[in-house]
Length: 171
Picture (cartoon, rainbow, N blue to C red):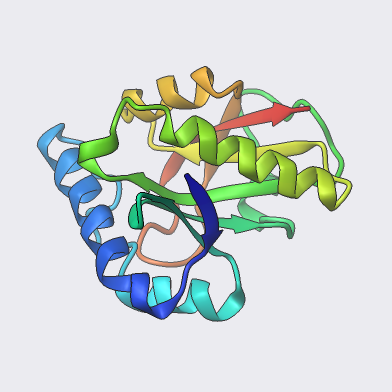
């Protein structure tokens, strides 16, 4: 598998994977990603900012994410708990795996790649959040070494103010 930056030619496949994730969440009655987020405009913006990444297997995009190495304002106010660390961190957003690859360890491989990228920047922490009802994502995060830290509320965009459970992995 190859973890690389997303390019414009990947956008149709990235959107297909995101729409699969939206359908999955809707089928589970979870309102995460049900308000027009993420959309193609945001994926193109991620590409322009250089934060969009894909996992490729046998020449096919099988997963997508956005990686930030800058402070996330929504992470400044954590409730019902606290972060493990207070220093610099990377964060994972908009992670989705193709239905055909769910349960195959792709997310864990992506987290390992983000961990390596973080270490190269002198960072020893990754933060991530998800909907409180998205139990499959919470399990995947825990399987990838993340620890539950508390609750945050999103800022901006169509999901502004939405509650999310927050996790951190320290390495």
